[in-house]
Image (cartoon, rainbow, N blue to C red; front, side, top):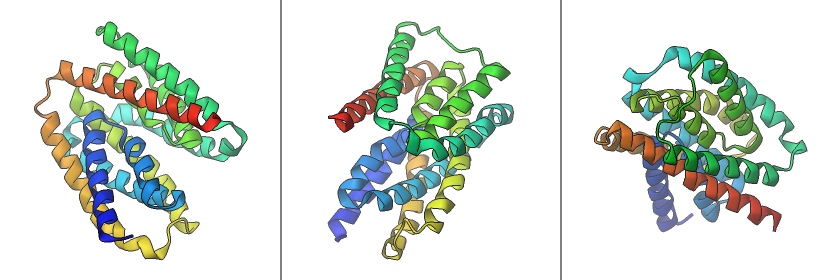
Length: 246
């Protein structure tokens, strides 16, 4: 890759980390389609995953005071376990149909939640386990469990610090599970290793900038921003699903 392409890729990585930190998800949704313009899919998948891990580490560090360990255990543990299950059966399921269904589901519920701001999911033990399991399964199956995790946790009426910190740590657990598999199966060529250090730095800088912005956003406004982001992500899922069918 020439220098201009590298700079554009780094800029896209920073913006995606910034948006992903504020919304709690969406970094891969934004960056992966851009990355495949510059490189093959396998290379893009690994580099985006590494960038995602760095951004999540930064977010988890900067918002660590809000981490809910009980929620992390109830929601995060089944999410990681079901991610593995989803990854194993991915070859047997038509992903385009699932993508469209998930997109429609998220779109309808984001619209409903915006129209009914008092709506929330009871953050009980069973609901946390179900939400973590479903989002983890979809993460392994389609690589897009973030919007569903974001919707579920923001609907639990969490404050913004707890919401971001918990999502970030869950994302870390998922990334440290999948990245070693990518690397040991040689998905990333040695000629791209030099991109890893700057991407790690960009991940931290993007999450730090996102923290500064989040600190200035009122809680009520923050929830609306996340719901709008989920709605936009759902439209992208629907478009990608339909485009793959056509």
